[in-house]
Image 1 (cartoon, rainbow, N blue to C red):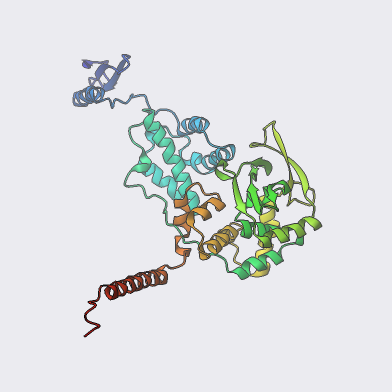
Image 2 (cartoon, rainbow, N blue to C red; image 1 turned 30 degrees about the vertical axis):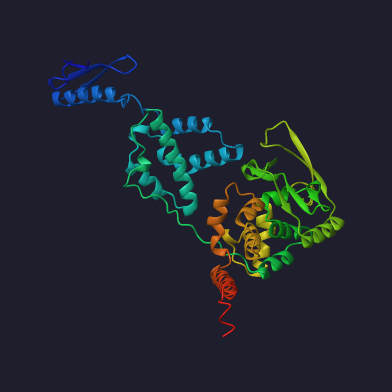
Length: 397
């Protein structure tokens, strides 16, 4: 049981009260107060928290946010690229404001100040906020702090509005294709005709194409680490997939390879430091016979192409727009959400539905036709039955 005793008087001669107690692990602890009422309140709180199992060490939370966050980051099971991106976000946008503060010093108002200081795109602010909140949740689980300040009602979280995907007109796809240098035009066809992500387009190899069966195996992508270091990695979510190869895509691909033969490229697997390396006969490469870097491609090829066509240079009009066009074409043709999700490489068909449901053809007219047809069939069957059971004497009269 905790006890209160008189301690050494303060410099002004006033008495000080010392609370002596043991923590749940049996270690002797003490805390000094100027007023007896405060000491009594602390003693009662400590004993109650021990009984409820909510005891929090008075010395907990003294670690700096930066030190704890770095330990949290090292314990994650992120992919190397996600680890690098998360570390960069924390270092550039969070540590300058929170890094020097102890965990116990960070309040909801501190988090609000952090959010106000970030003049970034709303999507990027949302990712940073999510990272910071996850760190504080881990600190709560580790009994470093009692509450996650990011979850306070006074904190204005970054907006989570979801914009509707607006597919490109088919003319834009065709125009972007023609606006690129001839050796890179196939990238538009692979993105719009197979629904590949940009890194998957750059990582597609001749050995992944089965012209006879009419399918493409999506096995790898080109990833870009800091310093423009390139590696081969599995597609997003570490999931390979098989995509149908339309005849029009196969025809252009054959023509492209006849003019620009495949080039074997060797890159590390997974991380730039990996000893294991892999080689692939890439369909698209640079003039120096190396894998394409998205930073180079977007800046030197895609954006000039947009300017030539007259397409606004925005995130929505990046190469990812070709995947949206692909999805819209399949849905308009009546393809199922599950099939579209599989071809796009989404881990959850529900995500595909939420993203593209507004692009699905209206079922209003189909519903009317289906119900009318069902009623007509029922009435026709009913009329036939009435004739069979008609009174035979009635026809003789």
